[in-house]
Image (tube, rainbow, N blue to C red; front, top):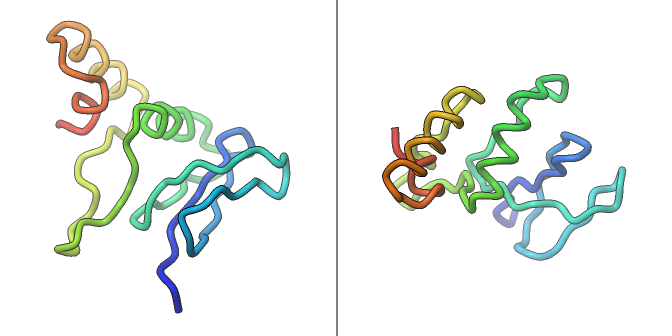
Length: 104
């Protein structure tokens, strides 16, 4: 069976597993799904804050790929407060947002 990775629709708050890196569309709204990675676990659909955090991470260029050594994707903020703190740190220090979000 081919390797499957998660793709998400942030508007519908749903996740799908697909086997190839190509453009997929959400079956609900027909928008393009965003690649989330093979180590991604979708938050509950009703958890709007977790989906907002996910939106910030994916739009900053971070995903949830598993490293070749079998370890996970590394640190990712889990709350809006953590995201705000990491983005404030990025603005203060000049560190790129993607790096600040991936550093504890």
